[in-house]
Image 1 (spheres, rainbow, N blue to C red):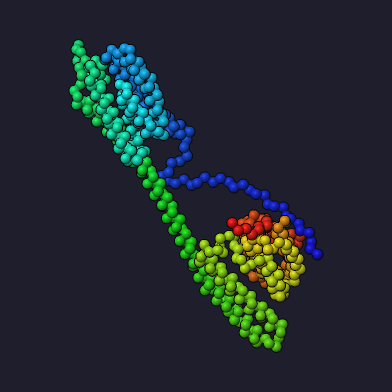
Image 2: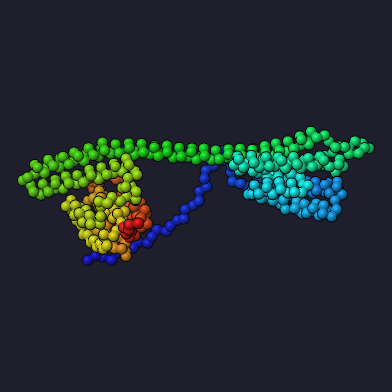
Length: 442
């Protein structure tokens, strides 16, 4: 009859601390409040300035046009409508980065329909050159160039006192500037606008190139790291094969010879046969481990370790082998729904029991062993392996504690809990694993 299981208190989960990334030279540090505000205020100030200049230049051009021709009636209404439209066109500069083409089209149409300035169209052209495809940028440049020429020519044809650009000698009347000055103004305005757009376009492209370079450098570093790890795995696989495989082969050979020589001693012959069988199984396990080391992407390494050859039914063979080796064991194993258990779960349960028994064989070979294992879809898998603490300083096989760490790691990967240590004069391995069913098709 099995004893009722007692679940140890789960260790408190400590929330992970946030560790800031190390500072890398050449990268900006954390933004201070005043620098972040400066970054935000820069574009806002530029937008306000562009809107103000666009509105002022359009209002001035419309006012000069109305005064130059002494417009009244329909002409006055037309100029007044242009002044109201100037507010809407200038306001579109606020969304110039989101809708550059729309701003360019509307501002160009506005400068052609009304005697207004082409400043807003030039602002839109700069954004189109910076962000739009090459063909669209060329078309926009041609259109805005025509609009700019129309606006400059319109100002040049007005009387001198109603032009934007005039000269006034001392005591004289306003004199118009020569036509080539207006041509220079148009050329400089277009060149400056296109130049700003190309500069921004180059800056964006350079940023993309840097981002791609950084991504490529990270990919290269990852590949180099993976190649280094694979070389290390290959080295470990070679060393394991050249050392452990050789020694296990010798154990199998000598145990086979001992079995043949012990024909007159049946008990000794049985022990020799068990040694040889375990050596053969160890060689098979070793070949599988070497295969995983050399090919980490294989099916065996896709999950927290799940060779399909190990099931919960194999536990009886494991316990029988320990008894044949001379262990005094009381085992209670109750398993339900074993066919629905997933391969990672059955593998982890088998290896945890195996490691617990191995730990006892190494450090307390003469201690009686109690094994309690219950498994069901409703309650999960409960493993309780204990032995009396050894007294005295008998010979023990050296160990590095990797087995206990492996039990904790297998339990963590499956979302279970483990408690390992001395309790009431016994060394206890108490593990609970949540049930994981085999995934259905699709």
